[in-house]
Length: 228
Length: 195
View: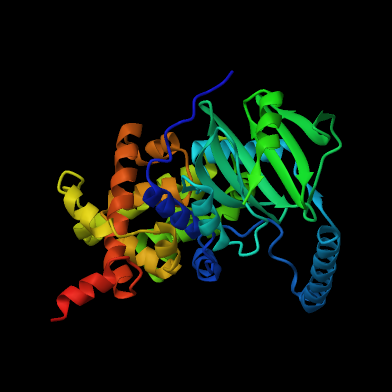
């Protein structure tokens, strides 16, 4: 079922406040004093009181743990930096829903130039943003998909929200899903719940469109994208 | 539930939230020592009341409600509720708000120029009930209906407080933004003020 776009992008200033305040959620805090205050007032965690004779093992355990952490970080870096990653339909659907519902901080914009200006502050060498024909640009934001930067634009096409995401094709790859052809260009088609998703690569860019519109309409929009 | 089971459950469900609770207390009070004390009280109360927590419900919302009651008790006992001005006493001045924030041409840029400590200080300028609402909805990203449950008020009140609170926060930050020349009209204002 097609849902109308909620009118929740009415105030860029409010969105900016939400975006800034939400970052306080990850503000670092030192819990050591709190933990000391709670000692004796709450029973220790089961197994926390270890016999004295094992205490000499603590430094060794700390060294072993450090080595393990370093090995894990190394493995993580090795696996994540080895080429393009795939954005799943579920991931992109969640991103689309978050943008439409205002759960992620977006910036209200009404032109690609304005979006480009705002996003270039966060991503100076972004791969360029497209204008979609017969649509109205409503908002933009920069997101991270598996630690890869993705520029997201929320368009209104015939009253339906469509999120167009752009990244470098060296960073994100296309899924192993059925494809549809349009003028020699292949569009990968996927679905997540009520949302349709089409993705393609063009001029070194990974492009993904997701929304409740039928697949052929999404492909039509994708085909008409013109990059600045 | 015996003491051992409660302890196990506490360390499984509550203990992992200590940084979040402490952060909430820190932003609420704007004071590290006060936040530590408030969080400590919250955890002691949570331990004692843990058998009343229903599994599969939101632990952070439950802890936030305990923290709020602990805070109210503290404010009452300290008779320090000077800042806890009721919304009835706060009359937003729409014209004033408009005047103070109309030159926020790039609000995101302006807000990103402030550090966490400055944001927390600005939040202290807001009435307690408004601050709580922004803390739960905007900082904790809690659903409005869950925030309404924590604060024991209707969802409609949450909506109105969120709207007012964001405007009040911008207004609270405006002097600092002006001081740092982050606002569009600063130069004009300086020019006007200089004969």
